[in-house]
Length: 206
Image (tube, rainbow, N blue to C red; front, side, top):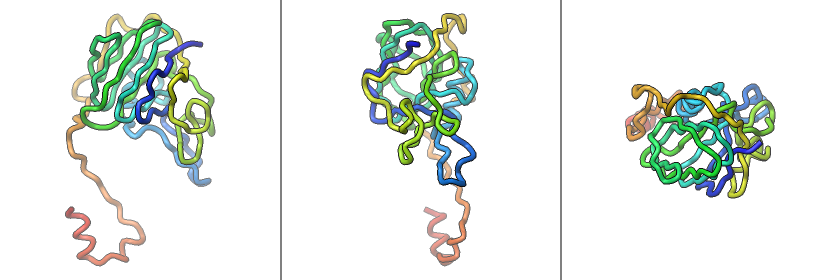
């Protein structure tokens, strides 16, 4: 099965799915995408199950050579994406053919973009029920050791000749504004009492 060849992996590109659940009691982290909303939308746009394996591209700067006819979807942090030099809209799905080249610039806001392939996503052997990359514990990823993608590696995916009559994207209301400063919510743990009221107040107001 052919697919995409990694020409440039960028600073950090990982194979992910929604993570390996049910192993935390043994110290195995679930892993999975940092931006679950964008990852789910990428798979949705190409008709995949939401947990299908896809790429999480940190900061951008990645390039791929297409080896087969299929459809791809790109979501997440906005960046300058081009297919054979032609610009691609953010949060969209689009057809590709063998011989094409996909170039992703660096993120303009936010950090992570997601690339999904139609036909069930990118193919890799699961570890503990998931292909999600876990670099710390050496699990998942393309070769089962949690490593980021490297130049020259091949990402196998299905050949899909017909999916949509034209490119597509989600309704604008589902696309986040990655320029917004997020609100962080805090749940106090058992050691919170070690800090006095003044120290806690200082933490919550900064």
